[in-house]
Amino acid sequence: MENILIIGAAGQIGSELTLELRKIYGNGHVYATDIKEADRDVRESGPFQLLDVMDDKHLIHFVIRHKITQIYHLAAVLSGNAEKLPNAAWHINMDSLMNILEVAKLVEDVKKVFWPSSIAVFGPTTPKKLAPQVTTMEPVTVYGISKLAGERWCEYFFRRYNVDIRSLRYPGLVSFKTEPGGGTTDWAVEIYFDAVRKGSYLCFLNEDTKLPMMFMADAIRATINLMELERSEISLHSAYNISGPSLSPSEVAEDIRRHIPDFSISYHPDFRQAIAETWPESVDDSLARSHDHWKPTYDLTKITDTMIGEIRKMTENK
Ligand code: AKB
Image (cartoon, rainbow, N blue to C red):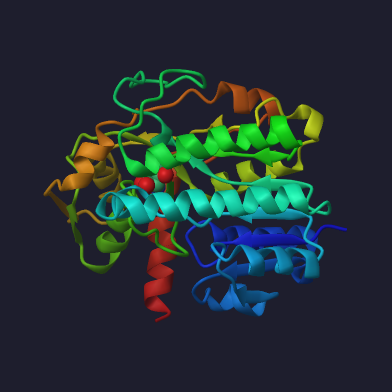
């Protein structure tokens, strides 16, 4: 029997992943936690508790008391916010991961851990197109540095202590349930909400800045698939490249006009433009695809149709 702990269940990924895992493992076996209240459906469909991953003593007690067998650690300070408070972001991103790794090492019941990495591990010296799985990685943001260091720590704990850690380098994630906060790829969510609610969007990146993106349903499927693989099938205990469509703000704006012909967009690049320029515009995820035959199912058209349809429904129901 599996008992799963989600850290960051109120966030963009956690709020959707919790509900999917509850469908598979049963509501009572998926413990959603965060430092802030989660959405109502997360709180009401199964156990939810306030838990601070930085509090290592509380964390280990929780894991032992609930006989946790799998941990998904999703809490992090994203790229944009991390640049505002680099020391604090480094401390939160690294110490929280170290607490999880230590718990997984010490508590025998814990069999698997998922921790997300990001395309932010790449930097200006990485090839811009189809960034390879193994390549030059010289990130210049504190978030990217913390994700690259985190990948190295994951592999270290696997080699040294046999801790089974699995990870994906997520691209920008597009979703309608819970909005992201503080990332460089947040524009790809904001643009849809503003298109439906206001008919216009002021974008913080240039019109032609292309970045790797993925619709949340694909990211959730890729994550659960990876966690369900036999341990012997995992060749990488750092993080797999994974990718959906590469999108620029002007391309998304054009696609939105299929639904909202008068939609207008203007551009006022801020400090996140410099971050985006250091990331590749696409990544080569052939290794991940060869492992579990995973491939994305959402292209730009399907992302736009789903986002506009769902946001319209949410707006009408308010
Ligand atoms: C961010 O923009 O910081 C994140 C990421 C790409 O990891 N969405």
